[in-house]
Length: 110
Image (cartoon, rainbow, N blue to C red):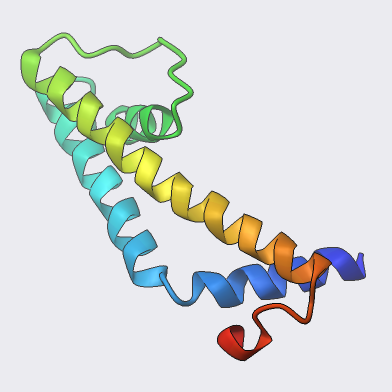
C-alpha cells in the first residue's frame, strides 16, 4: 500500500508540471465530442462518450461517424488521444523509474 501511495504522490507531482496541457487536451476532447454529437445528431453526451472512446483508441463501434466532418473529427480525436495518453504513459514511466532508482533525478524533481 505504501508503494501505491508513493507512486500516486510522485505521479501527481510530475503531472503538476504539465497539468495545463492535460486540462487543455481534455477540454478539447469534450468540445470536439459535443461538436461531433451535434453534427452526427446523436446528442452531446453520446458525442462526449464517442470522443473519449476514440481518443483512448478503444473504438467499440457502437457509434460511428456518417458525415465527412464527423470522420475528420474522429481523426483529430485520435491524434489528440495519442498526445494526451502519451503524456500520461510518459509520466507513469518516469514515476516508476524514480521509484526503482530514487537517487536519479532528485535534483530535477524537487
